[in-house]
Image 1: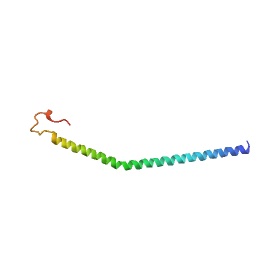
Image 2 (image 1 turned 45 degrees about the vertical axis):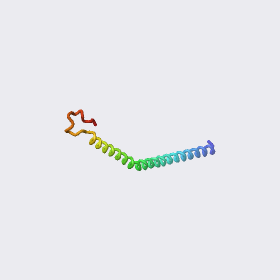
Image 3 (image 1 turned 90 degrees about the vertical axis):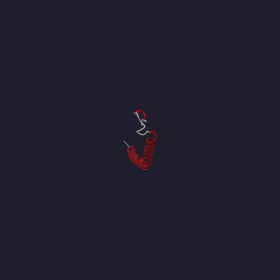
Image 4 (image 1 turned 120 degrees about the vertical axis):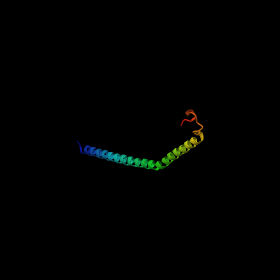
Length: 87
């Protein structure tokens, strides 16, 4: 094996190891960045989503209470259970 061939093989091996190291570092940094970004977006969306959910439930509760007051006959007017609206 000539000196030129050995030096070429060593150089190719060093370049391959360098590219592999760069690949691992790039993958790790990109994964960390994207995970952090998703975590930040999820944390920012918790309050608006929760508030929307609470508002929706509260509006349904108010509507149900209003429906109950307006639609249900009083106990003195109801003679059978069929007159009561089903929920």
